Each structure stands twice: as structure tokens, then as C-alpha cells.
Length: 579
Image (cartoon, rainbow, N blue to C red):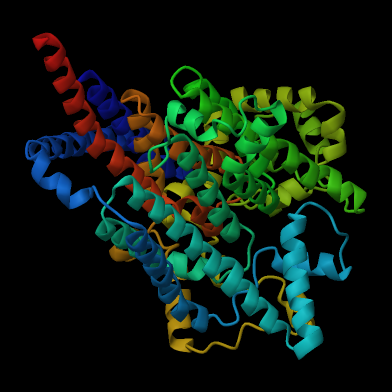
């Protein structure tokens, strides 16, 4: 076993065991957690060894199996066929669910966004203003023209969620096909993702997270196309010959415009991603720093320049569109403190525990200071699975005046009762690793703020396939049962993608594969920010679960082409020795 594989073995066993054992912390039994962790580490370690042996056996027949996975020739007609076939496959797979939930599940924050658009609530940037305008314009336009606001909901669901997601998936699979992956793999993985009951529910759920998932995937694919083009990039000598006689001394402006034109897809999808979700800008900034460090010494100068120019343009444009434009338009800038949801919830959780305990473990000073950060907080009303209530009562102004005092208080809570702090974190994050711990899975098929929706004439009782609707709703409810969740349904658990992501990151680190690192870095950054969020919801998980076919294809390409690259290097070395 090579050193890189040995490190990957340890990495995989330790992280997989933590993912599988973390939900045990909800019961606040450290010994059970440690026993479960050791047991799962052993199981995953053995499974990795078995998988490694099987791969070694298969790779001895490298030339035979490679033709099953990789193709060497393509043309424009085949590429168009792959794109449109996957596009149609995704839409046809989601159409039954669309008819079942017709015109769509008007849930999540959509009713509040409609209220903002209609002036019934203050218009703020708590929800992305672009998405708020899109929902409001479509629903009100259909209400004005056809006296049917449900038509606006249906148009939004079909074109801006179903069709947009199908387009993003098709573009991602087309890129993998151009890189050499055979169509049967692309069709198979795309169908498995699309046929998932959770995918069918969520693409018909009015929420910004669905188009955001498509925009994020297109953003990642566009970056890969710039840094790892599917077709050979013309060499510098060829480019010079082509440009000879046209512009022998290009100006700085012409060079910049040329770079912007080449990276226009990265810029456009990156800006859209930032406009559809507030954390999009954070992903771009952090991802830019991480990838620049990774590529600064290895990437070709031209590709690195294109990447840098595109990311700087995205950051500037996104800041203008998410901060400056709303201010000029009179939209109130809102800071919901989403990134503070976890520590806020943990402090509220400890106040609840201290309130119900006869032996008080918090000092009167710390308890009084903790209560001062909340507006009329009632410990008995705490929901351990959601930080929304405590976050809504949090005093943002007091925190802004002295953030250090809040974090010092949090550290005192942490050292006073570390096991309690871990348990409160497990309540919020465990459902991401095992959906059976998700208390709010049924929200993905439930209309929210029904009074306001009914007042505006929006109904969820127009199902064209009521039997199929009932079946999907039953699945959403049963997915929250720890003991009665069907095994086949657990195979579609979005948490499986987290295992795959951490494996892919380990592969990128220990095998030094920049292609794998580029593909997985943004989903991983999203997961890290998501873990700080106020509640575990299936719609949040959809964002990375939607991308697993593309990530799987990238990893497969990395593994199959690494063998060929090593063979080429060996041949070159032998030729050099002979000469």
C-alpha cells in the first residue's frame, strides 16, 4: 500500500466513523459515542481495505476495463445528443411529482417573500431580493392577467426550478462527457439523483435553495472548464500565429476584455449564485483564497489569470448587487446573524438545562449576562432541533457593540459544560449525517404560512396525481423515523453525499489531485457554513446532494486517468534511460 493510499485509509476511517457516530451525542452518552466511534472506525477500515484490493485487481486489467468507463473520440452531434437526452431525462423524471404537487408546494420562506413584495411586510435583504422579486412578479402578473396566482407558482416551479436544475445537470454531464467519461455512467448517475424521492419533492418546493443548487453546480463546472478544459487549449505559439498581423502589441484593456470574455460563464454563474443565497459571496471569497494558494505554483499562468480575474469580478459585482443596489433601492439591509446561530442556540440550550436543574451549574453573573442577549427568552419554549426561536430573540445591537463579550461568555459556557455544548450542536447537525434524526423532514411537502397563502388565493389542493402526492408525503414523514424508516429509503439519504465529499477531499489532498480539489472545495465550504446554520432541513441538503453525479464523475476521471498518466511517465523515463 502506497503512502498516499495509507493516509487516505486512515482519513476515511476516522471521518466516516465520526459521521456515523455523531448522532449518538443527542442522547448525551459519551461512552456510547466513543464505543460507536471505535466500532465504526474498524468497520470502515475493513471496508476500505476490501475496496482497495478489488480496485487493485481490476486495475491489473486496466486496458480492458478502461474502455468501459472512458471514450477517446467524440463529435458535436454526440455531445448535443448527450446534453439533450440528460436534459429530457431529468425533466421527465420530475414531471410526475410536478403534477402530484401542482402547482407546487408554496412553502419555506416564499409566503414571507410574497408578503414583502406586496408591501405587507418590510422589504429587507433577509431573503435574496432577486428571488423575492421573481416570485412576486410571476404570482402578481398571473393574478392580474388570468386571475389565477397558482399559475405563477406553477410557472416558477417548472421553469426556474425543474428546467433550471435539468439544464445545470445536463451542462455538468456534458463537461464530463467531453473529458472522456462514457454516456452510460452519466445517464445512470443522473437518473439515480433525479429519481430520489427527496429530489422529486424538493424541485417542486418554492425555495431559493433549489435554483441556488443549480447555479452553484454551473459555477463549479465553469471553473473546471477554465482550469481543466475538456478540449486542448491552443499553445502559445499557435495563438501568436493566429494573432500575428492583428494586434502585435495588445493593450492592457484588450487583454482584460479577452480574459473576461473567456471566463464569462464563471462570472455570470458566480454572480447569480451570490444573488440567490446570502452565503454565496462567502463561498466565492474563501474558495478564491484556497484555490489561489493551491494553484499559485502548479497552474499555468494563463488559466490562473483567468481564474483570478473572474473571481475578483464576481466579488466586486456581488458586493454591489447585494449591498449597494438594495440600499439605493430603499431595501433595508438585514443581518440575521445566520453564522452565529449555533453559538446562540448552544447558550440558549444551556440556559434551558440550567433552568430545569436543581443544581445550578451556571454562575448568577453568567446567567444574567446570557439572558441579557435575548428579548423575553423563555427557556421552557426552547426547541432543541432548531435555533430559529432563540436567534429571532437575539439582540443584534448589543452583540454589535461588544462582540468580544459574547464570545468570552460562550467560552465560559463551553468550559463549564463541554458535553452539553456538544449535545446542543448534535441536535442541530446530526440530521445532516442521518436523515432519520431530522424532526422537520415533512416541511419539504408542507405549505407554510397557510393563512397568508390562502388570503392571496394560493392553494396546494390542485393535485393532478393525488395518490402519488400522498405517497411522497408519507415518505417525507417516514424518513424521520429512527426505527421504522425503510432501508431502501435510507439509500437516498442526502447524508451519503457528505461521506463521498470527505473521501473526495482526502483523495485530493493525499493524491495531490487539483482537479478533484477544485470540484469538491465549494460544496465542502457550503457544508461547513451550513453546519453553523439554525436548523437541519432537507432543502439545505439538496444543494450538495444535487451535485453528487458530477462529483462522482470527476473522481472517476481522476482515478482512471491517473493510471494512464503514470504509465506515460514510466514510458518517458524508460525512453530517456535508453537514450
